[in-house]
Image (cartoon, rainbow, N blue to C red):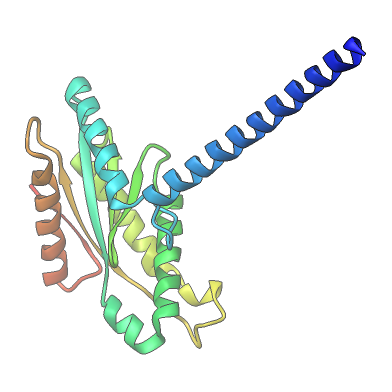
Length: 203
């Protein structure tokens, strides 16, 4: 009888531990899902602005320590409101997703792309000079221009051509974090004022 009681007790302990382990695993998985949801733009699957702010602070520290060049490129879809008005918001969403995919494919593995807001994307180019960053941005711009966005959706009724404007700026040693974004934004507006579908960089 004692042996049976001991066996039952051990069995209960094993089952209880197994249940606890399963519960802990499920809690951890849910935590990871919540963390990913909080840091990811749900439409494009890129990191969102909040997550980017954290990443950028870490990258700045690395750049200050190594003195390697660091650039940002601010990209805006040209006439995006017109796309939504003429083709509908589903096509607009498709364009955003497609541009996110093209951008990730076109960049280096070390580069980071963020959905900055609306139709704007921000690209972080680590260990990359201003000249090289402008060249990467130009390649991305021409790749997007050459893409037929109707090929990957049944929603479009004809060829769908999209262009982007890009402003590029290099982080200056010890400057405020907003400084490089402001200069990239200024370069972006220069690109827009020059007829769009081009790349400008801040001196």
